[in-house]
Length: 442
Ligand SMILES: Cc1cc2nc3c(=O)[nH]c(=O)nc-3n(C[C@H](O)[C@H](O)[C@H](O)COP(=O)(O)OP(=O)(O)OC[C@H]3O[C@@H](n4cnc5c(N)ncnc54)[C@H](O)[C@@H]3O)c2cc1C
Image (cartoon, rainbow, N blue to C red):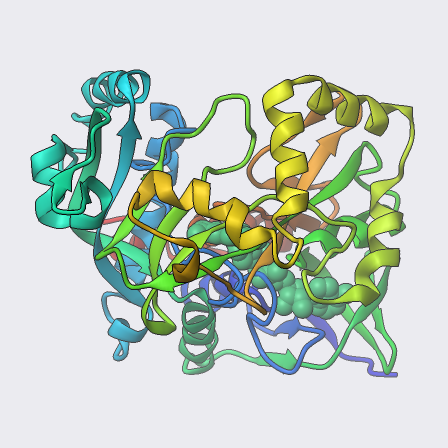
């Protein structure tokens, strides 16, 4: 058993864990950090480019965000843009495309016009495009058989900004940037943490092979963070609802990202069409939102872990019941189950995709096999409420647990900064505030 006691252990080598490794190494005086990951490399789960939508969420085209939430998300996204500025291989990490959210029909168009008035000052590059202007950027969105589509249609667009990220490449870059610094960093791959025990001020992190000791711990292990927290008696007021997302490919019909207006009753992002930074010559549509009893999309072994974090009781059942009572949500959940039925799914999905590209036909659509991830959405059992966005459990004794559904990858540096502050404070270390402001918050 190793006697070494690390200052910080980070569990989970996704984009959130690796962002923290980088921030601590680059901007704090904390030394001796260990990153523990169960797979043989970083970003193999939700942060892999295949498994998320690759969107750098800036809050402008996501109609489920208020101006306040959008402003927060924008600042977080800007940290990623600033970080990548000095990377040698920046063009393999972050990408520029035109992006827009389209309103289809009178009601959605009106909503977007009102949104434009509220957002245009904070989002100064945002433009309101009428149908003819959309046609110049995304012809397939408004043209059918050489004619403009008949319904009213407008878009809020940002045409020349970074809006897509390969979060796998970003994670790799965090690690390689951190390793170039003069710090004691240890990477432990193929090490699945089974339990964490807190004894006499030290955390004992037990994998099958060894026990790793640390003074402080940050767990960024997706849905597994809640599992590890609950084993230690923390976060018992939460349950986890895994919401899987699948994708569909079509031939390349879009030049950039095209989002749709969200239905306020539906807690998950509406379907969008995107270029895939990993697959040339295609457009990727999705994600769907399927309630799936797994903590990892293609890992059946995580079924039992799901049962442990579900902690099914009357309070969880009440949240399910409240969701099911709303007909829009009920129909949406059922439709998303059908999206998984081979033979039926492409036909059903076509209707959603046609809102974005009306000329698509069944033969254009193909299920993106092996693509998609799971958003670990939390249920707050005390308030009987489904929580959206990221969640943090911080018992205040040197360990933090992060659960990071969308837009968790876009806010990885902002969230890691919060954790860095908590950990550095706990260990009595220092942050180079000047350097941090100059490079990430300029
Ligand atoms: C369909 C879909 C679309 C999305 N689209 C976007 C998007 O466009 N933009 C955006 O910003 N976000 C998006 N997200 C969210 C984004 O993918 C996540 O917020 C982000 O990847 C979370 O990063 P993470 O590091 O917390 O988790 P992960 O990337 O899941 O990493 C967790 C790591 O912990 C490891 N781990 C787990 N358990 C253990 C253990 N016991 N011991 C050791 N290691 C362990 C895992 O192997 C994994 O490497 C999307 C998510 C989904 C599912």
